[in-house]
Length: 357
Image (cartoon, rainbow, N blue to C red; front, side):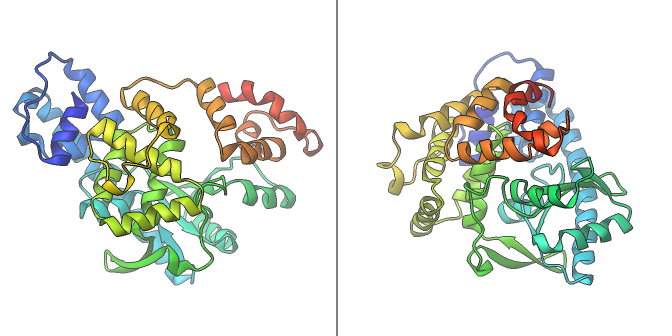
């Protein structure tokens, strides 16, 4: 049902929804879990079949907008603080995507604020945030200088809560795993400047944003259908030549199967036409990406054991995952912190600690 609704909105079709009886409460819960409240509510008049859930859906969409506005207020404070203290900052994920893809702040719910700063500015920014009433959330234990240096190598963000209880993630890398999507030394290759609420901000260009969204969705097992909607709509902003350039960038970063697998998933799940340039490139190598995505989008929960096995044995994660587990496994250290010299034991504890994380 929800897939049919989303396809109708994305591709402006006029086919009636499947004539099936549905549990109103379960349908609303599924829509909410996939972060689709505002997106579907904005087009609710097109679906007389959804009259029974219209009121509840619109109410949730308004609540989402209120949350977005609160997050935006915190974001603007952080942008101003960074400018006042000469800290260059990149906005990505939630709010830039709202503006870039949808042109407003009303179509999708953001759950936190995401920014990226240079590693050299992390301590400076943290001091400013703490002075302004922010609270450090993660890592939630003290690190000695040696541990902090290792943390910077194998993690990618620090988490805070604002005085208004908004979640702020300060990234210093796009992903924990440096083998997924590398940031070029030349910022002009991936950053552009834009005017956001009368402020000059930096954000990733469309090509890097597309690859980031694809990798983010895959790493998080496509837990939200809205992530796939974002990608379908962003793909529509590229012409054929530009998409070929994105594919070259994906190939350079050795994530071409991720790129093609996500294209294939959009086709199978949402009936998005496959761009002609890639129709002969899609093959069985991308099947695991599609199968995993379809399982998540259908509402089936992926077990923690399955997630762990996939993370360990999926290229290019293997080398980094083993390295991370052996020297500084933050996930495990939150549960049990071993002395530095005994961290070689963490790989053996990982299957157990993963169940409790």
